[in-house]
Amino acid sequence: MEIRKPFVAIIGAGQVGATTAQRILEKNIADVVLFDVVEGMPQGKALDLMEAAPLEGHDRRAIGTNDYKDLQGAEIVVVTAGLPRKPGMSREDLLALNAKIVTDVCSNIKRYAPESKILLVTNPLDLMTYLARRVTGFPSKRVFGMAGVLDTARMRFFIADRLGLVPKDVEAVVLGGHGDLMVPVSSRTKAGGRPSKEKIPPGELSKIEQRTRDGGAEIVALLKTGSAYYAPASSVCEMVRCVLRDEHKILPVCAYAQGEYGIKDIYFGVPAELGAGGVERIIEIPLDPEEEKGLRLSAQKVRQGVAELEKLLPS
Ligand code: TXD
Image (cartoon, rainbow, N blue to C red):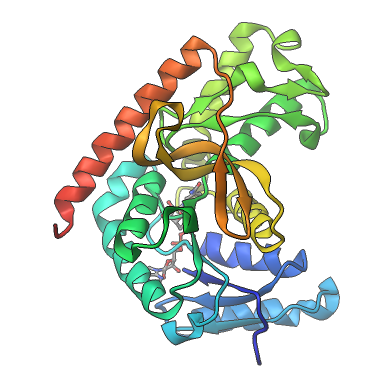
């Protein structure tokens, strides 16, 4: 089967990778190349997805592969390869293991898809996105990560659930590193067009903030054998669509900060415009002093992580 351009390549055909492929195909966004190191598995999943096409009514194509050559011509490469967390593990515990995998994957992206944009998903997210840029040397706007869209969706759902609203009618912003110090920007959340603060008492709102920070761990503790993938896949799909359709939508993106919010030279969750070029622009929104403080702390933690990561890498 011939894949048609523009297509998306997904590296890692596990839970997040395969579910992302399903969403991209069934929403009719693009053709998909699904890559994994496990022989037969991406081919099997791609074929299974294609056999759903007559029922789902889409005309997209997917192939599975163990050969990096099939990345040639990809418009955007989504990297989900790596290990997920087990109960009790932090995202940072995955650093050394996933750094090796992401280094290998990104060297191959550089070789076979040098013009592509790279969307990182593998944890620890901010550090793996930094690593992807370092390994490929791609311009920073072409390398970015998914976390804030997911964390924001979680917060939106929790607020909607509390107020009995339709989740899509709740707006929220979650910024910072994708870890325990992420910053739910409650001053910016809106439910049914009104600030959430008007509808939810402060104590309850801060519980929702904490549940958002713990959102990944809550699912890991329930599943016991892996981490979340339905909402992560929806989040990746949203970002991929913005790029392929050059939407310039503003989303929380793990992007390379170059002085915005007083943060420099690290990958970090900030509001950004996503378009055909990748991260077209980082947007600075007003924050209240507590949120600014939280953002600085979160940036410090990411910076420490980058220092740890650098120790593992050849200079
Ligand atoms: O918000 C976010 N960014 C995240 C991140 C949300 C959810 C999951 N998040 C992270 O994504 C998670 O912590 C993991 O680091 C990755 C992938 O999670 P997933 O749940 O999809 O893990 P799986 O099901 O174990 O799939 C990983 C696949 C698996 O099929 C392996 O065979 C494959 O990665 N793998 C590789 N593929 C290509 N190349 C190499 N070297 C490789 N090594 C493993």
